[in-house]
Length: 173
Image 1: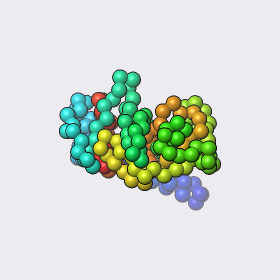
Image 2: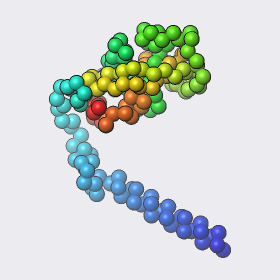
Image 3: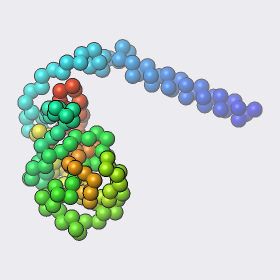
Image 4: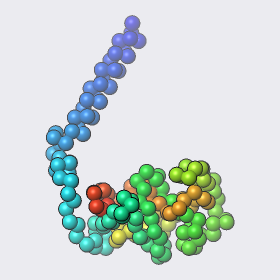
């Protein structure tokens, strides 16, 4: 009987918590600007990015956000991927950046769109995308499976914020 009462109590608390979470996601009950964002689907024009200020990446015709970045002083073309846990470099990009890919320790297994691959952890001294620059960014070098390097969450997650609109991705360092 006590087990049943405890389970009922846990269920009730969970239901109340879930209801509160749903209410907090309702744009009509939020006062933090989400209501305005939901009501207006037309993005506002963004100013040109200043060094260290807000940066904007235009959405490409294929529907993706492609970013030209500067990594350790060299140019790298990234596919912005919020589903990627880390910045992921192709072997070719890693070699251009000066990493000896033959000597890296590929001790991690990762899943890519093309299947499983091996990855090596590296540290990037600096990553700058449209003026949003970060130092000491963790990244992975994949031995295969990537058609383009990915700008993942080890970069994006360190920004103050990032926002995807219908036409651009806004990065706030």
